Length: 433
Image (cartoon, rainbow, N blue to C red; front, side, top):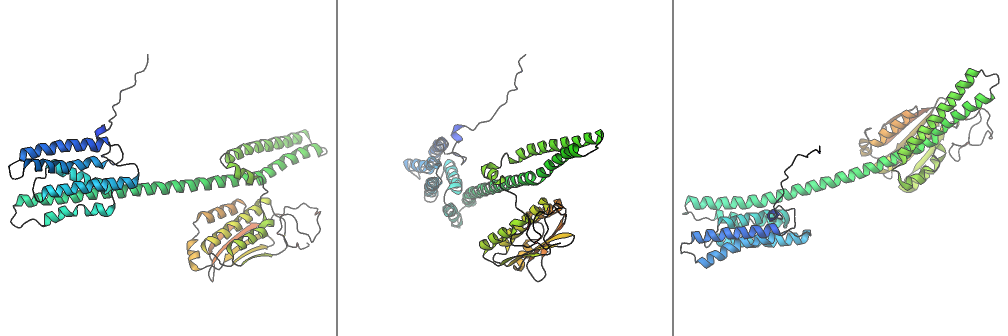
């Protein structure tokens, strides 16, 4: 059997309504509405003819009050739409006042046409015009003669209230639509920035995994294979274990490369080109400080204390990124402030301090909850260190990080005792042990 889909009924707007809802530029709706209102106004004028107003004049006023509705079709261009709707609404209000004030022959259809024109004026016409158009009806209600009967006064008050409400609802709807459009634009911009930041972070994580973690995993595989082949008297069980270690390391390296492919898939050509550059470390801190000094124009110093030692590549990269983010925050929140970047090689840890002498608002801005500070804390924790950030004593802002020192140098040092090793800041001299 062929399954039969249940029938669904979908309501579609009739063509005569198009253009009256303010969302379409189709002329069918206003023209059809003008024709219907004109027929109703003419019929009512003929029924109300009592000889006080000539019938031709009453018919003319009835048509004059309803015909401007045909001009409410909103063109697609906003400026042309505002001028067209404003002119049509002004004509409808003028005809309505002419019918109401001297001749008292305003029909119900004519009043409906005036209210519709005022509502559309609030939606599309200039705001001052939309506010001014209902005022003549308010003046008419306030200037009713003292001897007028209660019914005439009530009708005048209802007409004034209806005119003000029609224009007010149009203005309110316009303000709501503008607010929704503004919120949608802000959300789209925020989503774009978030996606861009996520892509950049993915590319950076991929580079760091490739340059640091993948290197160590490949070294595990190489050393396991070397130990299996070169260790004299190694039992068969030990050789099998070394072989398993090498196989596991190679499998992990393959899985990591697959993960890197996922992280890089939306990074783009620029990020791919950047991935091929070597990862920065402490050796590049001098260049980073020079670039920051040139960009900010403020005083910036790099201070290194203690005998310099080579560190693990992950720790060097983390220290570089923390200094980079700290300098960026300082330029953003305390432009022109003097900044000191201190590296202190203690016996058991590398201590890093970045301090500026910016004003107190800089300190209140960095309350420890920003994404930049959170990222720095996460980096420090992943490298086995700690990070503290907050206002400095005496003013300014201070970021302190500490990393345990684990030497990355080989037992035999092929370089001279007084020459800096790779990974040390340029210009620094290594103290002999």
